[in-house]
Structure formats: C-alpha cells, structure tokens
Amino acid sequence: MSGSELSSRRPYLLRAMHEWMSDNHQTPHIVVDATAEGVVVPSQFVKDGRIVLNVSYSAASGIQIENDEITFQARFGGTPMAVSIPVRAVLGIYGRESGEGMLFGDEDDGSEPTPPEPDPEPAPDGPGETPRRSHLKVVK
Image (cartoon, rainbow, N blue to C red; front, side, top):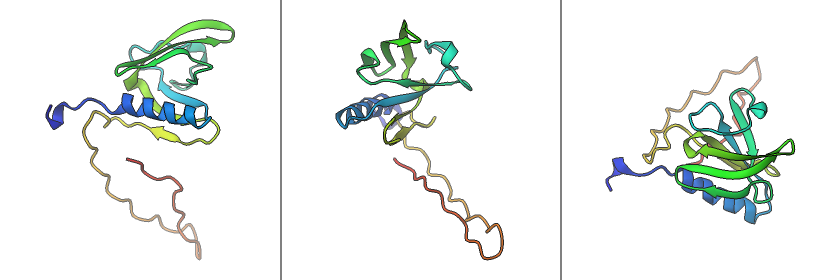
C-alpha cells in the first residue's frame, strides 16, 4: 500500500479515544455533522447542523465503531432508536467530565496535513496591553 492509498486514521483514533475515556471513567461524547449523507440520528436534537451524542457503554447499547460507520441503539426522550453515523461525519470526540478529546479535520484521509503558516502576533488592543495567546494547541 503506497502513501496515497493509506486508509483514514479517524476510525482508529475514535476507537482508541473511546477506550481511553472509558478506562479513565470519562463519558465519551461525539460531535457529529448531522447534515452528512448517511447520518441516522434523531433530528429533533440536531442544532446548527450538529448533534452531540453520549457514546458511553451505558448509553449506547451495542456500540460498534467500525472503519466506515458507528452504530448503536439508544433512547432519546424515552424512545429507542437505531443510530448510524458514517465515521467521516464525526467531527470530534471528548470526555464530558474533563473536556479532553480530539477534533478531526477534512485532511484526515491518511495523508499528513500541510502545517499552516504561523499567524503574526495580533497587535495590542491599546497602549500597555500585551497580545493574548490562545490556550489551544494543535495535537497531531
């Protein structure tokens, strides 16, 4: 398999993060692009084209995180529903208690993304103010 034929890392990272969160008593949640083709979720809980789903073993019965889709049974407002999410529609996974997790970008097709050019430091807002640095960091 050549470098251009590598499979997506996303399902592997999702499985690993889900297991790590579960092992550390975190409640894994996924953020899903509900407008993506093939997404089967309760539409009444979709907000701004996205839905956040609790995918813990206690909430997502029979969860399967396969290479192409995530499937499970869950209750929404007391009504059971079969949920199906193409892995490509998952935007991120995080632990509810800590907020720690991982976001996925469009470049997650198996190839390494091109690093962005660093942004110049923003100018101070006023005299004597120093520019604020972001508390976010890029994780590869």
